[in-house]
Length: 191
Image (tube, rainbow, N blue to C red):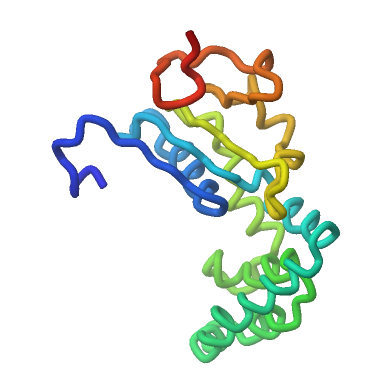
């Protein structure tokens, strides 16, 4: 982005749902070396396993629809290529009865290692594991009625004081501390 817009005086990033997890992972990995000045993570999955597990119980019809779409649009469309890499993992993906099962079954593809497990996948792709390295203000928004990543699934250890900057929780502003670089771009700025 910086190469495409070299004269831009400010670079902000927004991630939605799974993209917000990628955003937090990037910011945590880059630390203070990031050219990003501020970010917004909309409806991040604080814990992917818990999010899809809760969805299975609260929204089974939505889960079945998502599972069918993932199977047809990703697994079936790429079946020959995937089978060439790991046929057993393809069978496990097609046999999965829940999104959590499917995420675990696709671990060999995501981890690029045959035999990779769901636990390894979830550990390697947990954006909250690197959140303490985030060095820019991040506005984190979760909707109470989001059927995949509701605010109720926000990990208590990932809220408030555990972040080096923010996040701001509009339900309990007393759990946050002031942003060290307040700006008018996020809810960290207060008058």
